Amino acid sequence: MHATTPTDRTLSAVHDVPELPDGALTTVHRDPVADLEGRVVGYTVTVSVDMSRVPNPQEPNRRRTGPHPVPSELLHARYMALDLPNLVADRYVFMPATPQMLDGFFPTPVVPGRLVLELPERFEYSPEAAERAAALRGLGAQLSLVGFRGEPEQVALLPHLGFVVLDAGAPDLPLAQLVHQAHAGGARVLADDVRSPVVENECKAAGVDGLRGGYGARADASAAAQPAGPTQPRVLRAGELQCLAVMHLLNEPDVDFGAVAQVMDTDPVLTLRVLHLVNSGAFALVNEVDTVHQAVVLLGVREVSTLVSALMLDARTDAMDSLWFILARALTCETLADDSAGYTVGMLSALAVQLGVPAEVILHTVGVSAAVADAIRAEEGPYGSVLAAVRAHERNDPGAVLAAGMLPAEVSSAYVRSVANALETARTVTREQGF
Image 1 (cartoon, rainbow, N blue to C red):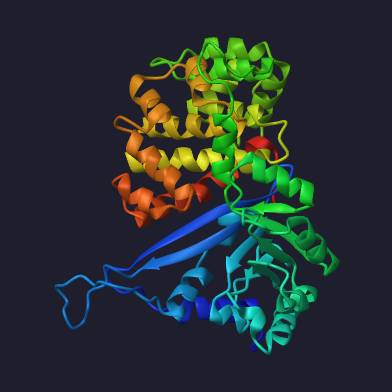
Image 2: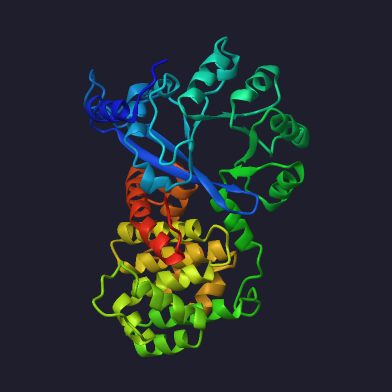
């Protein structure tokens, strides 16, 4: 095994990166890993390369059929090129270990100790599994074993593992027994792809430490479980209603900033936050702003919308990550739609998910155009296919992206850029310091 320094890894990433063949398409997917209180502690990041459009050298005019194996060095290079600070911030990053990573060539984590390599299938059955795992831990990587079932070879590897992942939905799985066994061996337990509140509650009862995958599906299920429609809305707090009232004014064709300021002035928290934001170093003002009216004019519609979204999430332990999710979806929808209305579609649809309320509650209170409402309600109309594609990407469902009329690589590229662009804004308005 070769221990690489950050400089070595950077050089290998820059100078020895294999070029993608013509026609090859790369997608990057990230999915939150959350504790049982809903706080995001990390992200799984997976990279895939679609080789189906690469011309066959023997028949260049004929599209390939059958399996399209991806050279491991090609896939590894894509992982090495990831912009982890803008993709996962200072959270844990979980990624499938390539053969090269198992030899010690892996990305430098944003925070030491927060890179988790997910060991390949059947790694534990290798005669040198314990020795290789110990060496990787010595190089600073944490290790995770997916598909933990309590088999002897898996149990023997526990002292070298930071995490194990189990399938909480598998029939006849002794969940509590496996959790106890993993904890006794010093590993934390993640349940994989939990999508329903019922399974989530079973995981809590068994002592599982966190949930890996299924983040969007759980949020959608939570929102769908609320009574829908303007006649039976989920009861919103007073502060939430004021924030939605501000959003309503911001969605008017001609925004009246005086009316926006008037509503915000009635809420001391809104007033303090907007003045704090505009007087922060982000705007480099010569003189301090003293009134909400001046502040909202300087900030503009988008920044004020972001601020009130953040305030609605303020009580959550994962406010920064929730807002990051909202802004990433909003910016991606805007990019793919090539229309600022796409931003509204993305923001309001994601806000409903993060608040755990039906989208109809948000739409009824805020008031939007028919085209925006149709997209959010039923993924219909000119923006519906865009929202459908973005939500499919968030679920890591490339088939559904294609069904929405878009290429997975196109949506992935827009989403990754949007995640990076949204991070600093999410940090600023939620007052998270970062790393």
